[in-house]
Image (cartoon, rainbow, N blue to C red; front, side, top):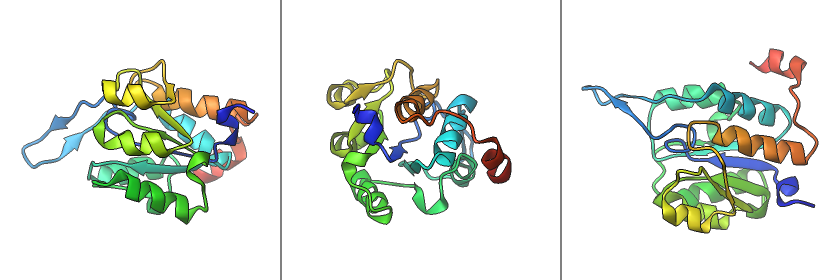
Amino acid sequence: MTPFEKIRAIAFDVDGVMTDGGLICFDDGNFIRVFDAKDSMALRVASLQGIKLAVITGGVSPSLVQRFKKCGVPLEDIYLHSRDKMRDFRRFCERHSLSPDEVLYAGDDLPDIPVVKAAGIGAAPCDSVPEVLACADFVSSRPGGKGCIREICELVLKSQGKWELDIAGYEKMY
């Protein structure tokens, strides 16, 4: 059994993982983030295949909630303004009766390190900070916002024989 076969959930940071970390800032304090559509589709496939999903981010924005709801992440599993990511990771695990070793967590910067270390598979985009790269179990060949989450979802789902789109479920849910 590969480590990816035991994964029942994928949790991840946003800026630097789902995005390249760049932010366009407006005078009113709002930001624009750019997401890779292929990452988003992979999350939808994972959701439809029964993988639990969570977002644990320091970011705060109604647009994040809307983006990730459209990717199959339930509202209650979107943790915004997270300053203690381990606390939110534990909440997610408890909510779904998951052992941490059944969760893959992807992060790229210093606040992610405790969760990267605690998860069954700690993953990182290839352009993560050196401290995260040093403790990650898996380093994606892709940078944040450029297919990192797609690669991770594919590895998990292919190892479980689940990498296929449920068209009927997709049509119904999305």
